[in-house]
Figure 1 (spheres, rainbow over the protein chains, first blue to last red):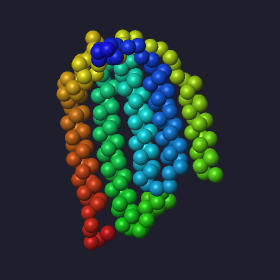
Figure 2 (figure 1 turned 120 degrees about the vertical axis):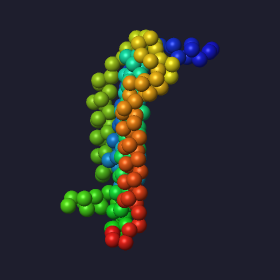
Figure 3 (figure 1 turned 120 degrees about the horizontal axis):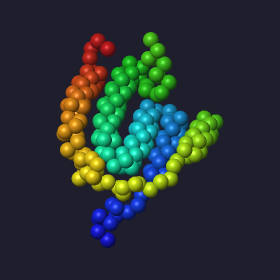
Figure 4 (figure 1 turned 90 degrees about the vertical axis):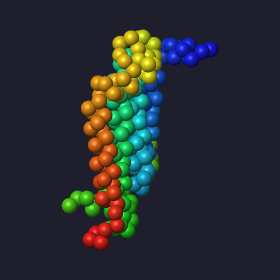
Length: 109
Length: 79
């Protein structure tokens, strides 16, 4: 079986949506369970990736590559956001000596 | 307790979202993204053609994020 036969096999959008929803639920569960910052950030990344799976599926469903392009931009922006979050938490860790999620109360002022 | 609440909430949300899933086969097959299909060019020609300006803006965003991380992460005397 060559590669074009695999690509042109009929595919269901419901499978993509199911995968996306499952990953999103896993991310939400992990985020609600997270007590450390790194785990919360990883959970946020998982949720973003769930949305991106759905976006790529819809993009391929409509035969338009704009969604796949937008996926690249969203990945880059999520990476930048993670960088900023980790930097903020490193600064908070230097100031407070610990960096749990409860230290975020510092950001009220 | 928190574990159980999170589990129940995520399962409930999963069950709510799973009701909106629509099953339909892709109308024109799975379009290969790299070479493009009949209706749209490939991802690369689109990235460097239609979305050239957002691509450039993203480079500035990456530089800004890198500089911000370096500024926030440096070991200053005044903080």
